[in-house]
Structures are given as C-alpha cells and as structure tokens.
Image (cartoon, rainbow, N blue to C red; front, side):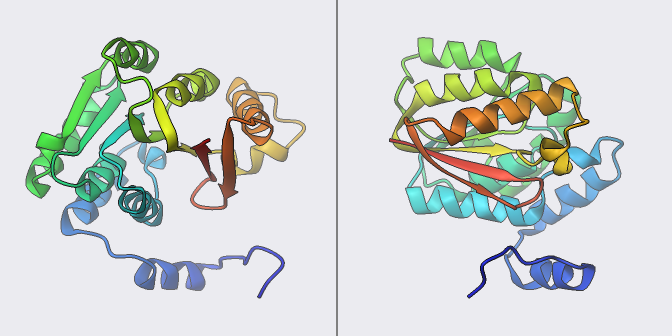
Length: 220
C-alpha cells in the first residue's frame, strides 16, 4: 500500500513498457513512424493507448468519438477494441497526419470501423447532434487544440449516454497547470476545464498521472 504516486525513473519506465501492456505490430510500426515526425510529441504513449482499449472493452462501447486524431495511434487502439459493428468517429483537420494512420488502419483490418471527418471538431460535434446521436455515444477521447477543450467537453457530454465515458488528455500539461507564471492561453484553458470537471455534478471523475495526465469523466 502507498499513500503517494510512485516516481518513474528510466529503468522503471522501461520495465512498465515491457510488462505493462501488449502492443500490436501495427501500433508499434505506427508509433515508430510517428516518432520521426516534427510533431511527434503529440503522440500518446502506448500505455495510454492500451488503457483506452481496455476502457472500451470494459464499458462494452460500440459508438466512440475522438477529437484530435493526429497520425491515428489512439484511433487504431480504440477501433481494434471495438466489437463487431462498432464505430469510431474521428474529428481532425489534417489530411496529411491522418493519411499516415489510414495505412495502419487498413493493415490492422479496422478501417471499416473508423469514420474520419476532416473539419473543425466543433462543427463535426454539432453535426453529430443533428444526426440524432445525442445521448448515444459510449466513449469519447479529447486530445486536440487546448483552447477549445471546454467547448469540446460540453458538446461531448451532450452526445454521451448516461454511464458513458469521456477521456481528456494533457490535463497536467507537463506540470504547467500548477505553474503560476504560466499564463499561456493553452494552459489557462486546461486549468479552466480541470476546474469545471472537478466541481461538475453531472459526472464522476478521476485524474490519472498517465502520459501527460488523463482525466476520466463518467456521465451520471
């Protein structure tokens, strides 16, 4: 038993990566290709991908939404965990980045489960409500532009069914959320959403020190 979070040195982090989860060949190759890109820092950790896949399986999710797809690692992890007939709607604005993911989705045999929408996510999420998906989404993941985090959260909470789950990435923001000298717009937006979720009676939530910080919020 421990009353505090364990610190991860390099050796312990390596052990966690080796023993803590299994990564498919397609996920590993996609992660490797992304690591050579200038924006590689936007990639989630493989452990986080495994956690999201586990959550999809545990909740029996069939309809998922992702806001911010980048090169498609999280989408591949989630889509592979969906049951037959499951669907993942991905919101992104970059065809260049998502085209990388498409190749691996095809290789893994899950491309048919992924509905990629290239448009501003606020527009796509509004469109989903117009398509009759209010209260129908089982699982949602947010990892996109931080300035709109608050808006994405509200839109997704409307789309989510009771008992559905939202996962919000980067909620610790490299530690900047507790740096009083950091007044950047991104940091302020993340702090604001963290405060909203902390007192939001519409959800049960937990903030985890996974990757750059991951909040799970379950709609009541």
